[in-house]
Length: 294
Ligand SMILES: [Zn+2]
Image (cartoon, rainbow, N blue to C red; front, side, top):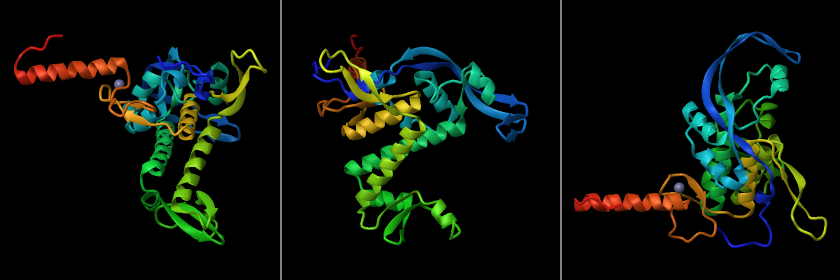
């Protein structure tokens, strides 16, 4: 256990529980023609992740490096399903009312594009953050974007063949910054924009929450979170704000929050420390040609 602190961290004040997605599987859905507002949706097949709510947990308290775990998974349906089984769907499963309203099946947890786009967006934000902290923002800009002067300002555009000039040009502009911005300032602006959009799209909103303080109103400003994706964006935003450090565990191979940990520590938990120790014993035993005692 860590030492008693005077003030709880913001992440600990967020009251948010989520369900792991039991029996998460990719299924082909056959749907008939339907009406979404004024848009008629033709009948056809689509592949979607489907599951049922399982055990609940508190992502922001129990999994402090979840946004990094998510960003590091492979872009494959199998990896998305594994993640969903371990940590849950990205968005709430449709309830009975919205299910009928949106024509979604029970247990619908998104399609491959939903998962791929969300992962890519979180991974890009992490990449920008890592480059700002110890990498090379100029190299990142060269690799990812094109900068073009727009009057006194600088437009940031996706890298690639130029789109047709007027109209399209402004449409594809990702961000406009001051023309005097340094490369570091450009990446800062892009990272802030990516995280702000993530928080906004996932409906992460400021909210007062009660604490056990007996003085004052006993309320603190924190956040309201309604989805796992929102929780991961908030986790990332708080990690950036708090300049937190992450390492990859030698025991389980997953990223963990190593803020304030000894430089030599390379395990995430006591369980993984023992796992590494036993593995070392076994290796030593094998190399000596004698059975290791356990
Ligand atoms: Zn571990």
